[in-house]
Amino acid sequence: MAQATDQKVDSRIEGETRWGVEFTRLRALILDCGLSETLKWGQPCYTLDGANIVLIHGFKDYCALLFFKGALLKDESGVLIQQTENVQAARQIRFTGLDGIARMDNLIKAYVHQAIEVEKAGLKVDFKTTDAFTMPDEFRARLDADAGLKDAFEALTPGRQRAYLLHFSSAKQAKTREARIDKAVPQILDGKGLDD
Image (tube, rainbow, N blue to C red; front, side, top):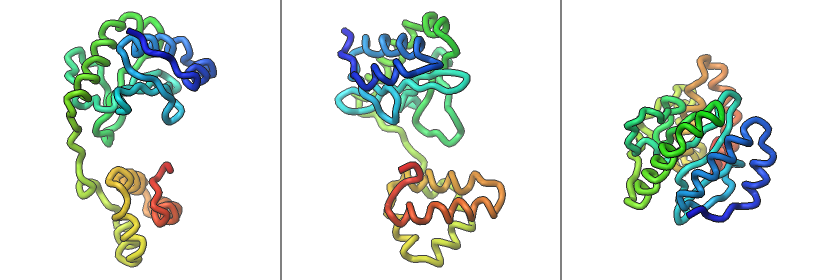
């Protein structure tokens, strides 16, 4: 039974210049699975009792369904994609056009239903601890030299800590790492994450 639509999502899809038709088809499939619709991170997001299940988003070359706990889904059809090696929980199904979605209507619904069952079962993704991520020497030196910064960093949620560590360590040159750290210090001291 399809759920009611959200006006914010209506506006978001109407304003989608590249993937509007595809978003509309994906939306109908997901709503037919009984999820609630809202707009999160500027994208159509579908929830079960407030828990995020799946999100529709578009990129230059493809649009995708992002399953928040996709790592826990059985991917017998081999369609789930891990965006980058650092993404631990989420997985995508990517589409380059409406025909690809139409060919997968039943499969898409099956994956959405599976994601709903994962949520209902209370399954959790085992995330790597922050200690498992590389801490660049430049940042470690800053933390050792500034107890306030160290306390502020340790007070951040593990996800925010990991985002900073990934951001800092992805720079190849020490100069770039130092510049990223300098820029991030005020946000860390304010208790904010990289994208807050």
